[in-house]
Length: 149
Image 1 (cartoon, rainbow, N blue to C red):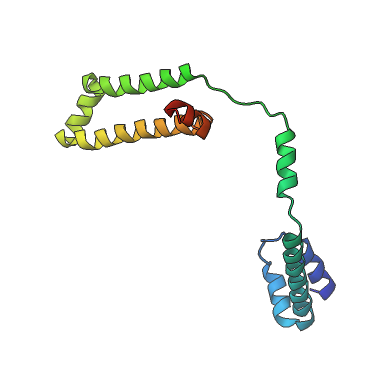
Image 2: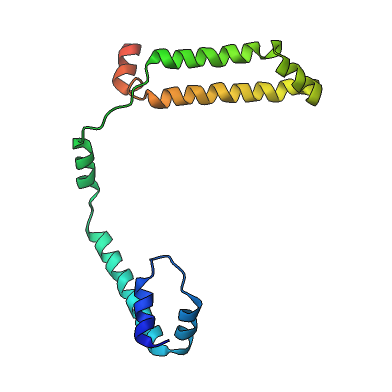
């Protein structure tokens, strides 16, 4: 493979793409191409380092994001309460179902502790999801108003 073809193939590769075997063999033998690629990569690294250090677009991007009129997804509290109610009713009715008896027959009476842990984790995750989607309720002004500070 000729040097100009090697350089052209190298420049067409993506940033994290590995070098093809034929390119690696040529670079192993040809010091001129190896020197060019090392110089190119170090120059690119320096350019990225200086560009990223001096330019900060985060404030500009966040201002544009805030100006967008994105639709807010809103799930009513009724749906959350209904989902929680079905979770609790499902857990409460589990001992009366034939599925529970099948699990007891299969795994024995020692099933109660792991099943209780699973139920507790499910309720904890449900509660955490509710709180995380309702962070505006839990801001400092609401808490101060609630506690009368």
